[in-house]
Figure 1 (cartoon, rainbow, N blue to C red):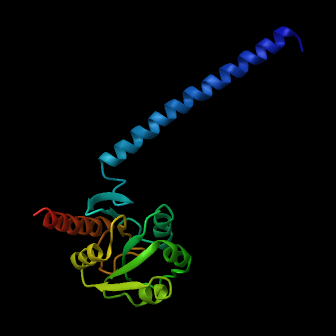
Figure 2: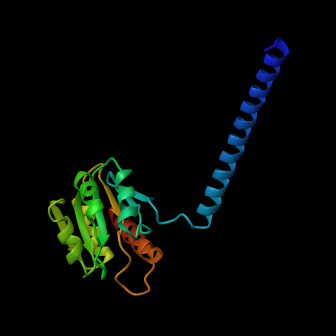
Figure 3: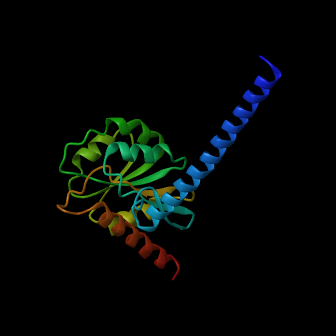
Length: 188
């Protein structure tokens, strides 16, 4: 290869690297703009969304996690002990994939719904503390009592609502409102 061919190849490589770096920056800006736009419109809401911290305990709304797989990813990305608020369901859900992750990460399970048999049975050997709550207010109150400093409370239902036509947005808003109510009581 001649000097001029090497120089030409070197310049081509340099130009390719610059083009790659520039396109990477442009794509990153676009991704961030898209993410911010979606967030502004609430499309990304209710998915591992931070609500507040009360007395060293963080609260997260993960109401959009309406299946075992979504809840698994929430637990997998968490390093602190979890007080998990989940929902029972009319469906016969297979929680097998979530058992090991729950055993490692969940210190307490609060079952929200009157359809909790399958949920409680699935986790009775993996989670030592399991409670029933009649509604979201009671579930959040229980969680605030069970959770200790540096724990997190996560509402991640792992199933569709047992109530007909209730959306994940409605359940997430119920969770947020219950948490805010506890927070207001702490500040009085």
